[in-house]
Image (cartoon, each protein chain N blue to C red):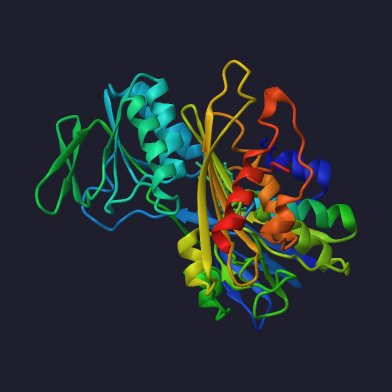
Length: 390
Length: 41
Ligand SMILES: Cc1cc2nc3c(=O)[nH]c(=O)nc-3n(C[C@H](O)[C@H](O)[C@H](O)COP(=O)(O)OP(=O)(O)OC[C@H]3O[C@@H](n4cnc5c(N)ncnc54)[C@H](O)[C@@H]3O)c2cc1C
């Protein structure tokens, strides 16, 4: 839901100043300054400051990325601009740079409008954080919807010829399109904090404690511009997602008002839909687990989304990761037509509770034929993982 | 107390709204570079 600045001003009594870009934080004076869109300079004193500047889409500083028809997708305005481009120009073919979840959601949206879609990325693996078998299932889903995947394609520059665009690789390979969507990732908008000398964490996100305080305790940071503690590893991570942003915002408000706050952190739960497929993850992948020093054991199982007697049942692929030394559950990833997205939350809560795989396997999970087999796919996975951990 | 928020989206507006609900006497200002603020909580 989008509420206008006016509603906030009148109903909530919040002084919302749109078209005000903050450019400098003066820590010694307790001032934030910047310019309005009209070019007027402003300066504002604060007792407490929250930096909630989010993340910006990464756009390579290569020739042609500033051409009209080369677009990013981050804000509502961006989405609107893409829509307008499609209606005002004949767009037969689109090229999406990047193959992350935002890129895939774009692919689906463009295919729904009957536009031919190709996707390109520099590295070889589709969704490298997913186990091979699960990533392959996603690749098949994209192929089934006529999305062309060009892996190991590194764009050197983008050219314009007449009304057409072409992304050109260093070796001269070309991918032609009428619209190029750049969705190669985001980067934390932490420049204000860095310039003010505040400590940064992973990926240059602003480092915050469990009360969302930065290295200066008058300054908070929250959301995509800030880092978080990972509940499984205890390490700082940068996982820019919406629930954390909202929750961190609440934490700031409560701490500011003298309430006790200590956020546990994130486990990296994420879901997205790609055409008719749900893709979900929580916790660590096998590679992340090994990197964090765990002795990772993994299983991949195939279960059914409904009891076998039910019509319309479809397979769910479940991958689970456990630690041989402690017996702890470390993570789970799932792919399926139905029943994957929300099921991941069961594993997410188990991670917050630091359950062992054996404890998790004893959970009393709900069963009825339309919703799954008697043994929930996660329980089947856990039972197998116990064996793999021995 | 003057509470200033830079960025009027998920994190910023969550904080601003809740701070105001917690303590209506707080002076809360949100600086947002774009033309809109949004809130989805
Ligand atoms: C296409 C898309 C799909 C997504 N889907 C999901 C999803 O399904 N699930 C999920 O969990 N997350 C999703 N996300 C991520 C989610 O949108 C972010 O995690 C969330 O918006 C972060 O909120 P935020 O307030 O920290 O930052 P942002 O939403 O980035 O807001 C930051 C605000 O600060 C303003 N700002 C920045 N710098 C300044 C400055 N110097 N002065 C003034 N104002 C400034 C910006 O204009 C912006 O309004 C998606 C993101 C995109 C782009």
